[in-house]
Length: 392
Image 1 (spheres, rainbow, N blue to C red):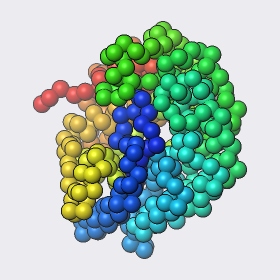
Image 2: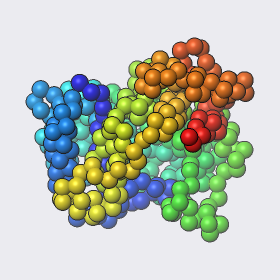
Image 3: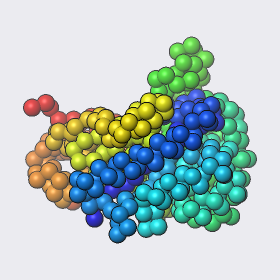
Image 4: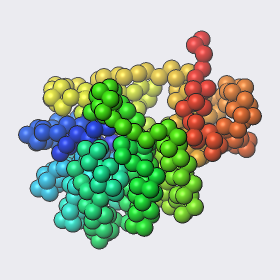
């Protein structure tokens, strides 16, 4: 049986956050029903295509049998309680959800209540990823979030009461109006809640977002680079001190509570993405679905699932990505796995680069693995650039 993951994209949101450049849309509620019809058709088309290709991805009942399933967005929980079962029924029709080791759903605290969370548990969701971003109401308003800090607290409590024992909270730093005290209070609040996983991301200004436009107009006031660096240093020190292991640059978890689905991305495991804007990595190809809901539905209704090849990976590109992604994790590059995948020793390809970065204190090596040092974690993008290979 082939190891792989499945990602399901639900592109609907109540309101577009000011920093968000994901394929998500507000005010498209009338498209939910036809979108779910397209999603089911896409699942069926890909399932048939893989079956005809003889891929070892099916369980005994002929359904797709991934190791992990991740339902993201957008905001999947923006769907009403009466509509959510439609999503799970179509997934159950094509995917062996009963035997998946980890099923994650993303949720906005402003779109869940006890009833909806109990429903998610009933349908087998084992991991809840809450997009809190901050517990400070001022920061939340500045980001265009639809929930308050109190609603975030309530969402975690209601999720725990509904039986979720694996809850992840997303937080952000470098936000408008955020100072060190505000950040520390949000981190301490998350720790006090006893969640199993915390993801913390620095704000990135992405082209085309509301924040990007505000920046161009001189209306976006952000913390200084010096303060943002202090925030980063605080986060990366306090979370491990409190028992949350840093297993990836932006992700911290209690032992054994790492996101298995996200780890598979960083470990070069293939995955299938379904829905508008979703990506797939299969064979030597990366595929991307059209981001616009209308275009995606038209393509799928014409039977064109997995037709848009975003990139056909060369060995060079595959090596580069293999290293970039592995280095994001605390496990780093496995010397043995690199040799198994590419038939070459990693030092034959990157020996000079590795030696130089070790001397600079950005990498560490023990003979079996090549990992980012603490300093390397801080300057990861600079390290990754060193793993770009020259054109032949």
